[in-house]
Image (cartoon, rainbow, N blue to C red; front, side):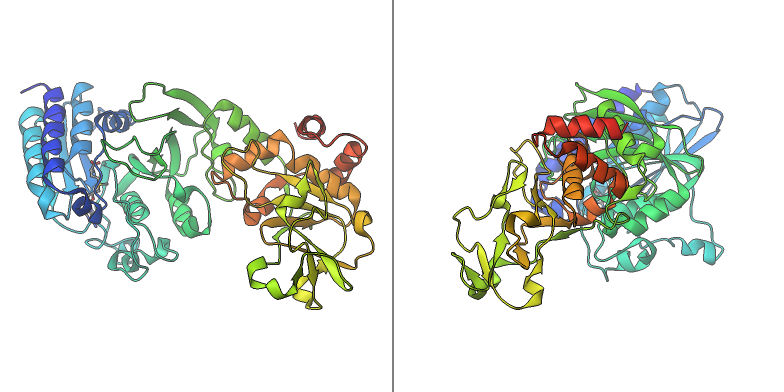
Length: 490
Ligand SMILES: C[S@@+](CC[C@H](N)C(=O)[O-])C[C@H]1O[C@@H](n2cnc3c(N)ncnc32)[C@H](O)[C@@H]1O
């Protein structure tokens, strides 16, 4: 037998010739991006090997040229596993099949594996969940490795209809592959996948997460810092991660985490994070990149209220200025009211007017106006270069008490507070380093999404009021907010 290392080398050489022979546009149609060598080896290294099993059945769905199978087989043989290895590879792009066959044949010769290539659609060729219903067991595997296609499909595509239990709207093939993989995994066994990060939060993936966590626990997560260096020579504009799940309901105490800037893993950092910090009770998954971030999460997640439960819901400003030109004015007149934009949020307060255009609104349409009371205003959009994601300003009714109503443009969010103390207290929270960092972990984008803010854990309304009382009379700096927050949230 040749050395196993030779077979992975060969697999990479053969793949390189295939990649050169097919235009990228062609491969994109199938969601075809090949895993880099280091990434494949890293993925294979995550599996626990059960040396007592006389046979291991491996599944690689969407196998491409078979690189992941080659990496896993090589790892098994390198570690001294001497039992039978049966690799099942699904692939539906006929152009890649000769390369896949060549690589698997080579693995048969060098590592003594048996293999089966299934030229079929992995998702529609078998029953999902309903397998239980028909009393026909889904085919079961000991180890599943995969780099699924990243392709959005229509909500009535055959794959989506076959797996409607986990779909909501138009799904992406990657999480359908992942869900089907869980269906094909033996109880107690492990599956390693490389996937985008988008499934970790939001309503769109809720059904999938429910399915995932009703069958599996997460044991390992690797996060890549850079977007486009993970796939060999390919630029994939997706933030990517590697995950290992185990088919069991018994949660480990910790998740083994790692992160690296790119797929050469040269700067890899390892850290352990409490399971419940990563997988929140609402089944959102927090991808923390360091121990410090883990501490931030566990501090905030120890609180049990939310802005919603405190009756302090954040909402989005009501005026879309380019659609309401006819009621906007540059200067005040009889019956006009103040209209606030993000430019009015300055140094922790709301300064109005500042001499910009359309700072006044003249209307009696109640849908265009809101009560003049105490508020916290928060910018909805910030730029990547800005230091803080959460930028807020306190608005006090007392500053403009001659107006019965005010109005807000839709590029700010607001929270109706009704007392200055609560407005100051919310400012303490949202202007603190703790909450700015928490929000960044929750949401990588520069937009402040009120639905997510409303679900963030916060202190009780009374505690927020007390925090506000402590800030009144002090400068509205981040340091002063941090001092108060550190006292109240440990
Ligand atoms: C992202 S590529 C990964 C290839 C390989 N596993 C690797 O890591 O280098 C996904 C592969 O899935 C295949 N594929 C796409 N849809 C499929 C389906 N419904 N059934 C089986 N294979 C599929 C594509 O042709 C492509 O080769």
